[in-house]
Length: 314
Image (cartoon, rainbow, N blue to C red; front, top):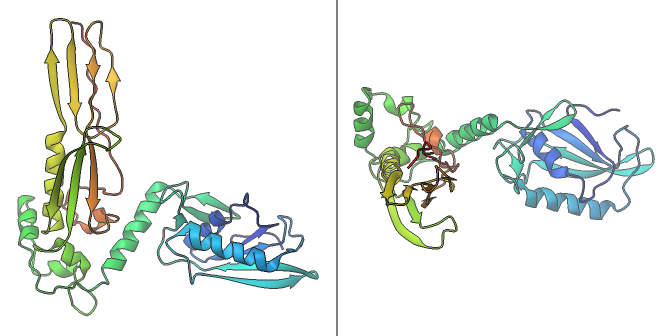
């Protein structure tokens, strides 16, 4: 039998065989699949010599190199085919998509999906969409440890944008569990909670010399996010120094080093200040938690702002 969209053959399990990629692809596939070890790509049975050792290595590689944990989503068994022993790995479709190779994270190099008879890299847009759905669905089912929540800051935010929260906003924004209790999304958007965002400023990219450290939070996630964005806006400033022989210009803010010679003897030098955001709660899926009216925020990616200066003559 040839390979199909749900069947993958591997002649043997060696360090060069990227078995994690095949497992991740089936975890992200809607129907899961089967991986047979001891069968070549033509469907010919070649068998496995060390069954026990191969099964142990297979289990360890999946356990240690695939995220989120796939434990409970795969099964390893032996079969006899053409008088030879082979290994059958059964992989179920996971409920915490997107799954990925731990080494590469949630990127196209780490996340794959089964397409036909091959494991194809998953586009970043699809990875982000699947993760947003997973985060929303998971924390939406978690009951808040506090039920005496108020949302005055959320109302103010909507009023500032010309929108109004009606009496059904708790259902509309999915702030309630199925039994009518506040969920963890409501807790994050409430006027008071125990979460914060830390913003650190360093003198260089090696993050050795800490210049400033600020913490925003213990309030609505929207208000804390606005405070962080306001801080970053203040720090992304430009200062210029003009001397008789040269013109020095420095950019302070978040970004990669950027330098461009304008003309001799005038030139531009960029001195970046490095920021680090440290969220006491999980930052992933932060964007999906905010209402549609909220400004976009991605806490899972670093952003760079570059302000090139036009070439001018002294």
